[in-house]
Image 1 (cartoon, rainbow, N blue to C red):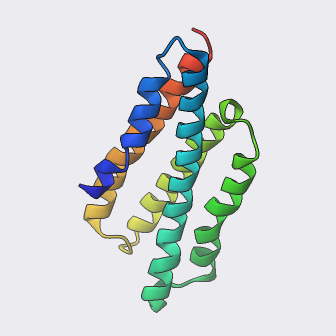
Image 2: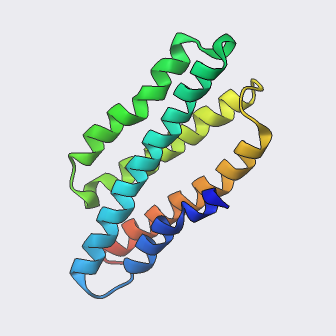
Length: 137
């Protein structure tokens, strides 16, 4: 339930992007982009925690991966929200791909990946809606 509550800001941002008010549309882009970066950072941090808790899986690559989303997030946060939405989508997609690969090694629990599939889909679709609405089509 907590995971699904966590997509509320994405869905709210997507809904707000339908507004004719340019300020609300800009706020929606800010909310979606900035929240998306924070989620990307969280997804990287999951691997830091797992590496610390399961020493047998604590390879240097897992630890490096665990901080890459936060490093990318810093760069993305320096961009205007409208310009950063595509990068946030890419970051969330990359986090999902890495999780799928690591789950295939049996390191992540199956319930986590079932949850991640749906949550990532909602997040990426919501950000895509915002991008589309901001494009003026």
